Amino acid sequence: MSKDLTTIVDFNYSLIADFFKHLNRQGPGSLQVTKQALSYIDNLSQVKNMADIGCGTGTQTLTLATNTNAHITAIDLIPEMIEVMDTRIVDAGMSDRITTIVGSMDNLPFEESLLDLMWAEGSIYGIGYERGMNEWHKYLKTGGYIAVSEATWFTNERPAEIEEFWNENYPEIDTAPVKIRQMQDAGYTPVAYFKLPEYTWIDCFFKEMPPVAKDFLTRNGNNETAKIFIEMVEHEESLYMKYKEYYGYGFYIGKKI
Ligand code: SAH
Image (cartoon, rainbow, N blue to C red; front, side, top):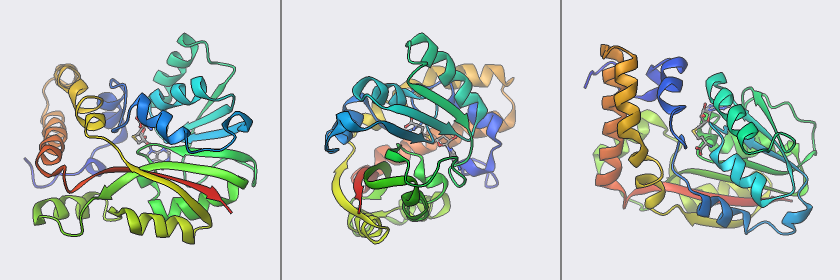
């Protein structure tokens, strides 16, 4: 593997999109996990205004639309993700329930105190968990909820190889008690935390990749950058399989005070 291109931030968005938009999910998660997170929200039937931030191609957005009465504004930075999602929304007959926006999570287009629920599965890293918790707070009504999944250490000590990987990719990864404290300090009552089961990585995320990787390489004429990209993705999978007792994703649900 090249020493120059080792993390996803080294690749341009169109290459990232050209791989990830062909997957159902762009991160670990599942229908059951989204429903479990929803189960911690009191008076869910009263939730009217909702945002799904870093929605990707929208698998969890469709689950949210099916399991709530809310209108959902779904936002992603990468236009190709939103294009795929728009087609899926039409196919699912959900056009009146979901509005999509190409935009950035550091400049959200919401009025203050408007939202009942803010959702971000595997995406708050784009702004950083602590910054997201603090900056998004103003968009929620008092008593509104935030629900995010986020990279989490499951142990206090970790092998050096995996520490180094995360320090390069997302140094804000931390243990659940730290994340819960940050949530509370940002002005929410922590309501629930749970660890995403391993199948949400292995079966719902990694398993889809081999045929997508094959097509991706063909489409890109097996060029060097495309090969390095796939090596990086495969490297991430092998690290997960080796170190999954030390890290994964946690779901964090909080209620605005
Ligand atoms: N929620 C989806 C996608 C997770 S991948 C799922 O669970 O499958 C993370 C997504 O966040 C990507 O689609 C990426 O384009 C988006 N993203 C990253 N940084 C962002 C930013 N600053 N603003 C908006 N979206 C961002």
